[in-house]
Length: 337
Ligand SMILES: *[C@@H]1O[C@H](CO)[C@@H](O)[C@H](O)[C@H]1NC(C)=O
Ligand SMILES: *[C@@H]1O[C@H](CO)[C@@H](O)[C@H](O)[C@H]1NC(C)=O
Image (spheres, rainbow, N blue to C red):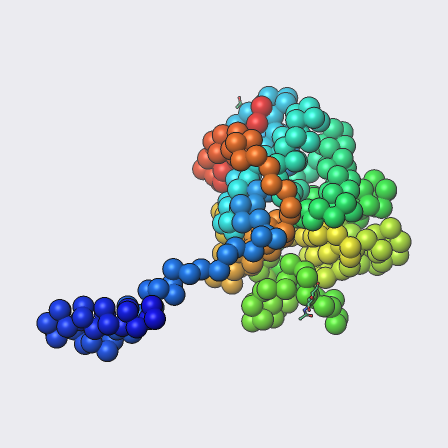
């Protein structure tokens, strides 16, 4: 009935236009109007306003050029842009704030990122351990809560899961782009690589599309023979360093939404200081696909915190500092002190 009315109306309209408009084609486009406004309701099981917590790292991120404050910590802005580019907002988790403040902020986010860096001891290590345990606890309680551990983040999770602070091995993988070699017969369903376009997936193993910058890591042999690690992680990819020594470059927790990458997905699109960082269209797609993955995971979190509390804590309450003009390190950093 409604359609009949619409059609009559449209015919009347197009007639009114004096025949200069092709009645058939204008009918076709206008007829879409009533159905276009009926969008299906959003999936109630997903959170379309996800917020990701990023843990700050000790220092100013610029070797004292920006701040020498002893309580300074920083987040490279590339991690923030990485999250924002995939449709989520960021709350900084400032590592040296009182634990109750940190835990309050953890209750406002839908997932966490551990960044790259160098700190492996002291308060920072304790806080990473505490958050990691909380991530597992939340998931065990049925509250899906993803963690993406990047570079140092991967190394720290390796130390925590194995309960061995000396587990890491030395590798020669500073400032170099690399390939990713996939474990034979690996099922990428449910992993960071699941929605990578097949062509890009293939290129990852033959072209240097990911950025490595680390001196430590873990070999696949050591991970496999360390029972705590092999029962926790499945190895998705390995990479050879400049001495052809092989390390685990991507690992996925078997029973948790915990993904660990020794490489830097955020750098390809957002860091410019090192000429080794790949910036090709394929490399940028790698950044975008990993960002989409972690935010997709965060949308599955059931946390629905008060929006005012979220606004009060978002990264937008801080301003990044441009330091790329020094030509080394990060382009922009958020400093907390
Ligand atoms: C931090 O200390 C170093 C060494 O003393 C100095 O060169 C630098 O200018 C200081 N940075 C700031 C932001 O004051
Ligand atoms: C991927 O895994 C999910 C569950 O984790 C399952 O429902 C789905 O069928 C799997 N898809 C493929 C293509 O194996």
